[in-house]
Length: 390
Image (tube, rainbow, N blue to C red; front, side, top):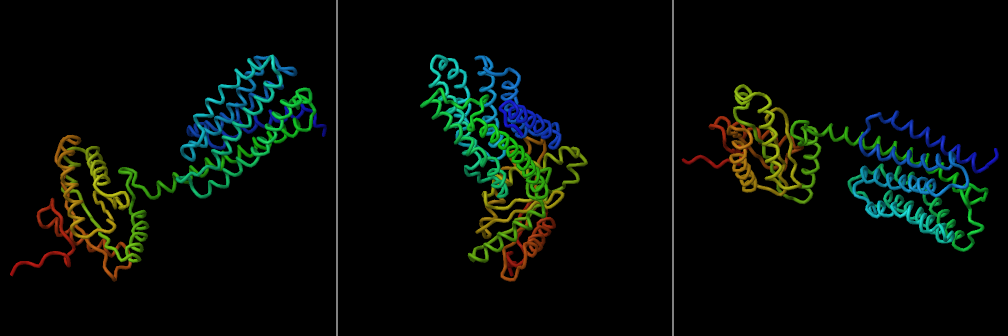
């Protein structure tokens, strides 16, 4: 096959058009915002090569500004997509500022071909480098599997960046021999081939990132109570096993605080189920506020909640209970329009406990005692209750 520049450019445009159409079909026409940034990156790159194909050589200044502007924009949008998937990326603000330099470089560099050619390729190399940096920079919240697609995205950009720097060097040292992309210079042909490879790798990386994000949402939903956004019972048991193991390894106390909304059926009957849901949401929010970040808060089902309190004994549980009752007394009337109260029981980790369920059963006995004792109170498991006066 003849590697004539126009043939390569047309093939690259067709490839980008195919990828640009395929991604929305595979991920859904109403994909999330991050995927739209990624799709926009491919469409912007398509616009670059479409300008080259449709306008032809030599490109007039307006076509150059449009082509380079779209080409630079494709890298900025790719970096913006990375930020959506991985969290804040280094150089994001600089990327937008750098993108705006394309038009001034083209306009002001017209009388100075050496400066224009070197400056534009250095500009491209910097944008390509920012995407590589964005892909490989640490992302603490990203799943471990993201390393594979991040590497897939960055790898073809490294030689592409090298070719941009080489073109900048040639443009500065020998403008006559400059490898224009519309010419047959080997460097120009290699750049076109690598651009197609980078586009294919980028599309695959975007698909992998989208899939990883979707799987992450499913994992979160499987462990999260949809109404309160607290951990559900399954997640509570998993986290409980981890906290129990840590407590035993370091010989630290571990407390389980179990609470149940008082007269919840009456709340639903009198105020309606929407108000009942709002009451559960308020209690969940306040519960998260009164415990520490490392404690595990969960809705076990219905109006029952549980908290695992690391390095905590009886006084710590009583302090949490007091803070929650105080906060609820202030917020319930204001947000719900009616009073809200709860009964609670608690238990401590014992030597023979095999799982968090063992602690939970004893805390439930304390909760039952609080209900029978008049509600709106905290009771410990029987072995921790003070002995009755003689």
